[in-house]
Length: 106
Image 1: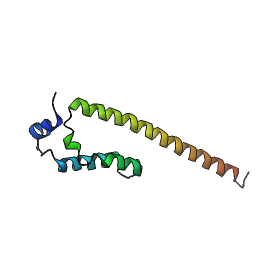
Image 2: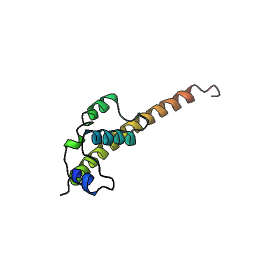
Image 3: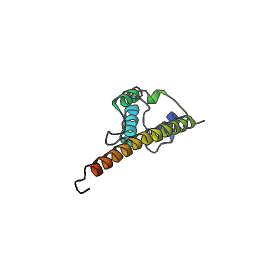
Image 4: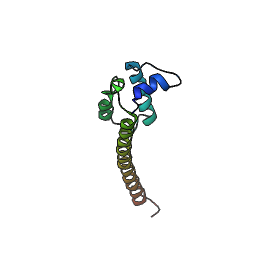
């Protein structure tokens, strides 16, 4: 199986050193792509993810392992979005009920 490190160093069109600077770049891009407006992750979740900031280059994982991690994240993200959508829907329902019950035209 191909290791991610080998792919980046040997096959990438612009090879990079696989070190902490790459880890920081990957981590930063990952968070920016997932939560550009800083509204999705809680502070606790960000703190949990920060433990990976300088370690990504150390994982030496295969493409298959990365795909499994991405699948795990997608499942987590879907559940998280569903939870947040439920909260938004509840707030909207409460707002609609409040407005209709306080409508002076009724």
